[in-house]
Length: 333
Image (cartoon, rainbow, N blue to C red; front, top):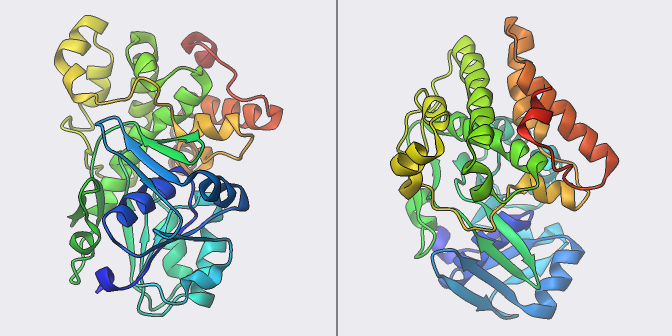
């Protein structure tokens, strides 16, 4: 049973620290595989996990373990993979070397290809796909703040892993079509790059029709690519994927009236890609818009906006100056 064995968070960034912190607060045995900077920050300040809904806990040393040594995988009952997509193959190698063969591996990563990489490099092991719908902001001083709503969804299995991992303040639900769920999340994640390029808080960005129209056009390209591949995305919101672009294009007043109550977003929330640009890190653009451009090339589709956004993000990465603070018109040029 997972409840009696350590849960190891493999790659404790913003999502990993928040998830690990809430699990530890609920009494689970949790260890974080993290970079020295994160370990030092938490050792100095404790690990504080907060939410826009009012949840606020601070875990002190002794309530969870932190290490940069992969030997912490040795007695894992579950490994929650939260590294960037670019690091999936490397973390799989460490898991293969150190984790018990019966440990369940759960991918809580962006994108749609990570589980295939994990399964290829971890043959014979139980690897489950997952989807994290919410955004977490690293606020410094050991604080990680959940800024948007939603429940984690993971692939349904006979062991009932979702129920075993679920704790108060961190609901984890099973899904029998996790592939569709992941593609539905990818559609929403197309806004990550737009938010990163805008240098605006998410709520402020989505309150403006020109930004929503840009997002809608992005989703339309994504939906066309998925249709060409025979992929049917599953919505992670109450709005069906095919209808979402039309609703995003509505005038501000109508949009607020129809969907304002469903957008539970902290005023300061921003995308993880914005944070990557601010910190000078490589983004996951190749695993979001890059997936759409790859499908388009394969299928002979025209997706100019996706290609433009990939180029703009890569330029911002190369310049290393953080978000360029572009307008929708500058992105469309």
